[in-house]
Length: 434
Image 1 (tube, one colour):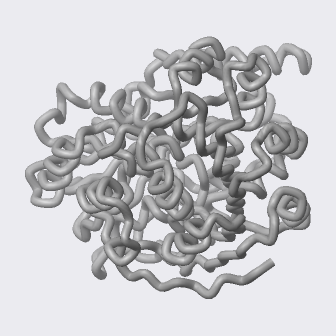
Image 2 (tube, rainbow, N blue to C red; image 1 turned 180 degrees about the vertical axis):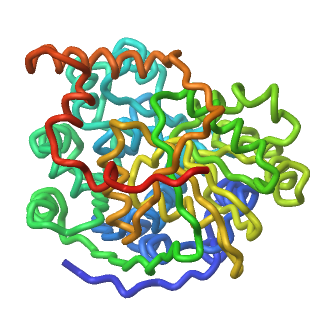
């Protein structure tokens, strides 16, 4: 395996990307590539197989998307020419959003498919034609087996989050997909850790790969006050969000959600109370709308900005007073990236996180990652606890009840969990009043 001497591009302009990509980067505020984006461009452009080793939050998604989108350039064929495999539905959505943002000024057809959604609807979308397909392994095989999806035109395969794919046991599905591809294609493998399993996968799939590795610079959240609220559901989160946004010192607030759909939903629920003070960022927004939203937030005409993780890429604003994690991030490493939006330029900052009881383990993982305990705050006495549920929450609640019944009756899952274990590190903390 050849080690690549890192190419140092300090601006995207130096990369000599095509006009449509440069326009997207410029209009979305991207000026300087991250180390992995700078280092990976030349070997991926060369057509060689590449192993990219980089942590989440280093910009690795753009690192492979930029040269792929440059190569695809415009819509052609009915079958995908680039295939990106990721382990989860949420990551499919995140990569699709990033690709759509970069491809704002061309006609490329970008599609994400994953399990848990209607396979007929997804099959129909595939049949309409796609240039870049982002998918989970299982759903890719499901639709491939129906012969709706053709993989014979794929020129580039990306296996992203390879270490997680191995941990989740997807090796057989990856073998099936790889066997269906044409003999002549480029393989790109991206991973946060280079385990023995990932090494075996690389040996099997990649031919004389170029290896690009960057280490993430240490991030600190020391000057940021961290707090969290445990809440039962979406509508209670909305009620608390309204209370917090009514506090006078919440001067410039960035609210993070997981998906574009969620961003629009939160905006809808806040519209009546905070309509003129609020903006939303994600890849489905028109470029002029995004530009005006950022201008208003930066100049103080709007004090609330709702964004997905991808939508927030490229934003550089120093005076954000509060970050609110309405949803936990898909990947824990994104937490540092989110909260680092506040507490800049030697200012202090505040980051507040909403989580459900089912997400308590993820909160503990985040604490371990940042080497800090996040104080669980007492809910305000005037907070209305809603009993209304989103459809996805009803499904989760139903599944928990089914599991509980199978295990053998008596109480909800979370009640039994809490009663059957020693006091958790979190539940033993002293809560603070708001």
